[in-house]
Length: 305
Image (cartoon, rainbow, N blue to C red):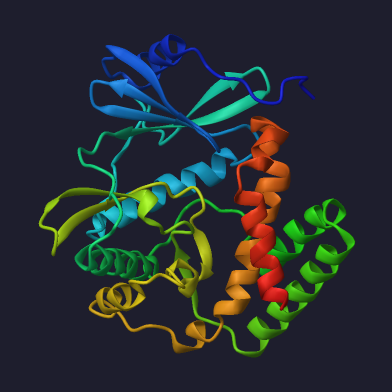
């Protein structure tokens, strides 16, 4: 095992790798974002996503690239994946901590939504999520994604966070998880292809009007099979506009609507793992004071109540 937890590549080294393996001209490479993964702007015209070591296997990254291609063919606007010169969908950077998968994407010109979000944006977002769910019904990938059953999305993160919680919060987490497991078993929502992080943070406005904006969706890092209703913005003040847009494309799963609290429990426990374990490992324990951990603990206590 390497002594390195996570390294940061020199932009010029990645530029040479892209020129060599993708065969595209590179003028300049800039680190765009470093969080769960590293994203570099590769001028002209591309972004390079560098997955952190151990997060996604090459098989899972290939699945994600296949998904992007399938969604594009089904009319869902996504940034196109650029194949390497040898035809492969992804590459690898041999980082000090171990191999890190790479995906090169074409740049899509647009801008992030800025709050307050107009009703038309929420309706367009609802239509976009519905198209992803509809396209998932015909997705037949040649590669596999990691498990998304309750053992993977609820039991595993729960086991990791329990030793780090206070006794009272530990009891709350166990109780909330047990209730979620029982509730989902008694009245299971529909399952299918989910984006996994269907928020306004992961769309770009590329044109249209305020009432009818044109959107592109990106970042399928958390995509996979799951409860479709988990992609809905529960609690949003513009919930009705989102649902109105969604139902233009496909009906809403009514059993899923009744499972809001159980889906919240899964999300809260996943958030606790992220802010207690994953993020501090590469951003430092100081990140726990940013407020996100307190919010997750507050959500846990509210659910338990």
